[in-house]
Image (cartoon, rainbow, N blue to C red; front, side, top):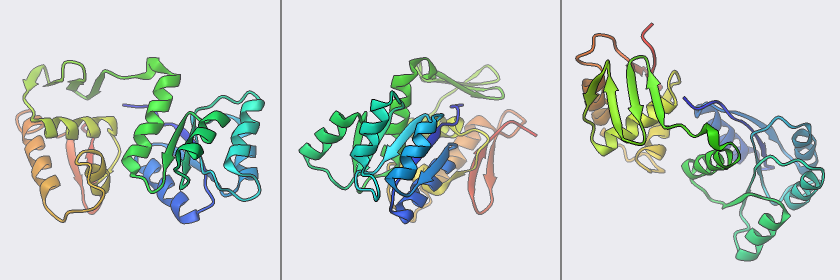
Length: 229
């Protein structure tokens, strides 16, 4: 399972910041928030973050100034600019100031998370995982092989993606919204039973013949893949 990341979100739109923090928390990470550039700079300067997500237009100190100052002081944590300023010149300014990536609002949370994870992988390439497991359930991402108790399991592509996501968040409750965005690439709820159908099929393949249940329904919340209690 991926290690939790500590992320600093510097965003003056409180509703947008709350949405981002909630999504990062649901994905198993820890997100701190600063509502203006000065507070964000002070927190970032203390260090200890894996990634900084910074808006361009901030009160007290704008995002470009925050990044310029951090880089001038030798603070080298990966920085993702997140801004409504999306022209080529704006993106170039952000990257030249010291940003490592630039995402334009409005955005899909799945893309934001993927970009954050990509920045961390670039900084720590040894952290890239090729195998995931819970109990005696194993997935090899390179060979795309899935086994439980040494028995090979045959999964359809969507079932593989679903199981991979559950394995990456093992022990956590995965919500319907998280699955729709990350497995189906939907940024809205189509109000169908597509998730229920695939969960049922996946459960039949990974649990039915093995005695101990790994895939659990969390009533009113979502699903959890975890070790038997």
